[in-house]
Structures are given as structure tokens and as C-alpha cells.
Length: 178
Image (cartoon, rainbow, N blue to C red; front, side, top):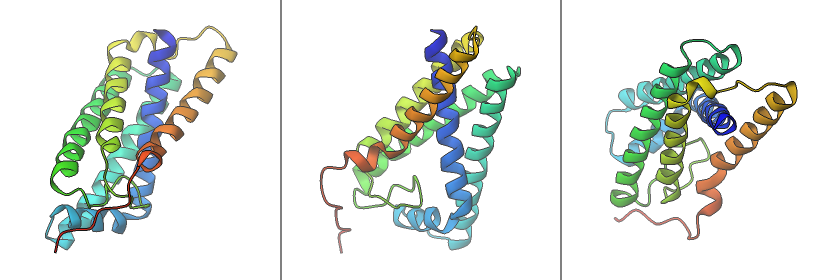
């Protein structure tokens, strides 16, 4: 359980850092995706896109630093991360059913929504929840080698999960109905 909890906390935090920095660095991409999702006000979309990026990056960074420093805020941060991933999973499920031609808004790459987006969000939410529940086990390895193993595996899992929806897309993008 120690390895799983540590891996989940590291992976889920890293994905939020990458996603958040991508959204903060290119808020127009998420704003444009939100327009396709049905958000009308341009000013609201840009503000929302920037806020989402800042929240993701902040939660991810706080979570990672809390893991490294074994800070007491880790449990609350992991529950917050799990909650936001849960919201993303529900929203992405709605998006897959209602606007299957829309870009997911996950990153500036603007890939079309597919079933793997809510699956990834749900998996990351579940991982964050497991880490929050088993917070005493997170990053309690007994050696430097274990620290390196968890960190390396966390980066690998974050990279795999980050690219999952785009890699698993099996059909060309759908066209928005006229």
C-alpha cells in the first residue's frame, strides 16, 4: 500500500502541475475549447481558463511539496485534487455524450473529446482518493532507492496518463453538426 499511495500522490500531483502550467501558459486554448462546450462570454471564458490553470498548478505543486516534506496539508490537498478530478470526470462524461466533436480542453493540443478523457479523470481521482485515505503511507519509504523509484514511476505514470486520451483515440475527429 505504501508504494501505491506514494505513486498515486506523485502521479496525480504531477499531472495537475503539467496541466495547470499548460493552461496558464496558453489560456486561449482552454478558452476556445470552453466556447465549443457552450460557454458564451469571452471574458468569462478567459478568466475561467486562467483560474482553472492556477488552481491545477497550485494544487499539484502544494501536493508534491507536501509529499516531499511530509507536510500535514497533504491529506487535505489530496482530497481537493480527488474532488477536482471527480468534477472533471463528470464534466468530461457530459461532454462525450453532448458535444462529441468538441476539443476536451485538457491541454493546448486541442484533441477531440473521447471516452478516455473521463476514464483518465476518474482514474486520477480514484488514485488521489486512495492516497488521501492512506496518507500515512505516502512517501514513507525507508531508503533513497525507494524515493527514486517512486519519483521515477510517478513521472512515467503521469506521462502515460497525460497522453492517454490522445493516444487511444481510434477515430478521426467528429464534425460539429451545422
